[in-house]
Image 1 (cartoon, rainbow, N blue to C red):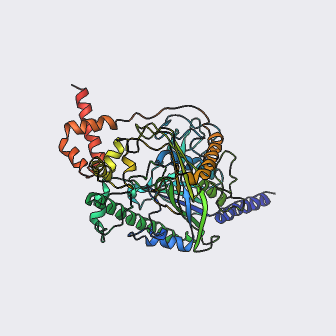
Image 2 (tube, rainbow, N blue to C red; image 1 turned 45 degrees about the horizontal axis):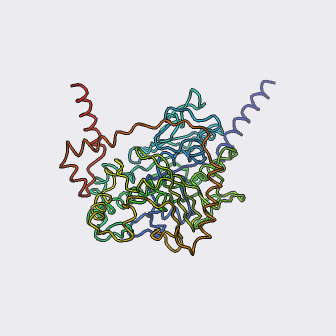
Image 3 (cartoon, one colour; image 1 turned 90 degrees about the vertical axis):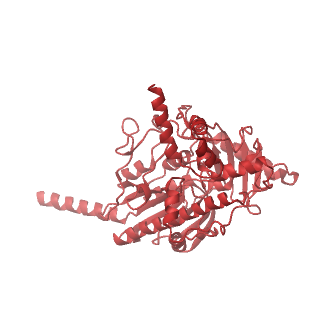
Length: 496
């Protein structure tokens, strides 16, 4: 009898091990502040051989969009597979001490319940890739029950070939604005030549703007090398054949009309999926994909049923059906905002409910992190911007925006007041209202983080006039550095 029990136990353990081996490992690489600015998307000047290889060996999606163009609401939607408005996580850096509504469970917990080890970051990338940044109570590592335990991942940095499937989310921070941009550029063996880069038509052709754009391209190329290192580690550990690798951006690029805005460059992201076992090489898809769909797709790869609370759908499921992505922009630091958008990949419609809040709202974050803003703001005052460059600096936004993305990919011509497109406008107005009614917050809790940026800007202007002037001349002077100086000055003042 005991012998039979032992045999049964050994057989059960062996079966469990073999079953676990069959489940794919999954790596979700998330590059910060990235539009489709890769060579494989036809983006000029930049070289991204590792991501090119990933695309040619897998599938590239041309019409993938986030549901919010700012990091924390966007990441909140992806962590839950649910539109951020529905889960009341749509205000940037808000509700950080508020437990998630019981209706929702982070997808990493669903993976853990299915036998996955969940890993945050990677030891080989800048800052170890550990960013989370979601708008509900959480911590990086630990158990989760949503009541007293709020851990989202099991461990940091390392995945192993130990017979148990793993999920790893790796953040590539290099493309986010930071003090490292100059250092990365200085160490590059082939830094971009500012005089040869191709600027979008809505950016002014100015030396400071060109240099800033060149630096951004340098970061992309460094980021591509990081992707190469991750694939190399998979090969060395014998994990490459059974690992799904997904590459995306968390929101649009960190420049004018990118991150923080509902134009295409704020919402459209790269999406590459690599898994030779089931994905035919070299595919290109024009499906309209929401970032929440990526979460649902990961669950399907893992054999986990997609819960009913998710607004995302598995991309490779035969029942996948999405016509639009519903985008939203709400609170961003000290700027109260409410704008909504839908995009079909062909048409983009934006409704600005606070047109009195200009695009250039003099937000502290942008003052520090947008050299082009300072240069172009001055040119606007002097009447030296052309019709493609002026709209960002006008004192008000239009109430409605309508763009044909096929004919006008840079969204230079607003068709909302063109009678020729009245039918299209009427239809998109109706369609967006359906989303407005369907996707409403689960509760009204609103606890925004207090932002010191505006006071810091006043301090910089009065106490560091030379540095403030450097900023006005299009130099990125370093947010972190001056933030520390400001806090130190305030602390000293409070002790007097």
